[in-house]
Amino acid sequence: MNTRPLLAPWLALMPLITACSSLTVVEPRDGSIHVAGPGVPLLARTSGDIRSHSVTVNGQAASPPVPRTAPREISGALNLGYGSQKIVVSTTMDCALCSGGSASLQAERQVCVRPATRYPGVFVTALGPAVGGASPQAWGAVPTASGLEARVVPDSAGPLVSWRFTRLAGAFSEVGVIESVEQPCRCLRSASPTPGSPLELATCDPADPLQRWQFLPLPGPTREARVQNLGRSVSDACITEGPPPEKRLIQAVCQDSPPQRWRFRDNASSNISAMPW
Image (cartoon, rainbow, N blue to C red; front, side):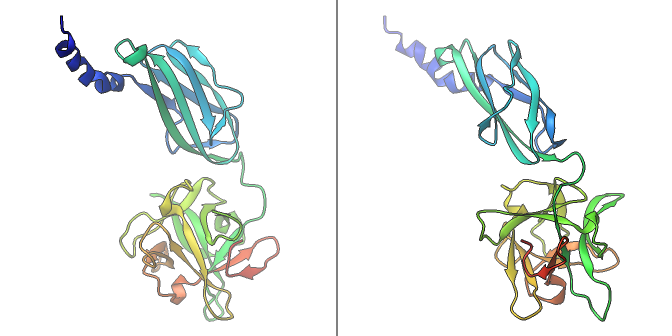
């Protein structure tokens, strides 16, 4: 007896059957912030009994390994250093209706890990031009009733106006991410394509093009630079001092006007230059 007409509908349903298998990472949540060390919890659950699994952090096997703690559960604590961390959970599980009786699934979480206190090391303050003998103004990560805001504030030379500039793509790159020392794991990000919109302090993710900033020294003896966003159209989004009284950091079309000209001070040596590294 020819059974092909009976098999064909089942073959058509195979992608749907496989899709019915599930892998859920309960924790950590995507975009969550954690303290560095061995206590970052991981919990994943599957719809079928787990045959094999793996957990990696930034492409390397998690150490110590995270065990299977129940037929359909993976649970343990990750030991994470600070910075942006990509966690990948991969499983092969039982699936009675799947081809070969099993399904292989993968789930990812991107988290940011901060030190227990502030970052160790030396950091940089971004300074605007001092006009008419006024005290220098600097970028600050300011807590407000509505959340964190990036503003231009008086230079205090302290953590509020200190930033961790991480260069991307090699030693001679002009591109990096900008992370607050006062608020670790919070990075400057272009939140909207609209000119004049405020920048936000988002959970750091170096893979996010809207968190990538290019530093371009300006001609002349003043040791100043423009800072433009790489996730927007060329020269459409330069970091700009916004209007008073808040003086928030906003993005605007790059014109190299005074509110868009910045200098960078190494807070250990007090040297000032047009580049933050």
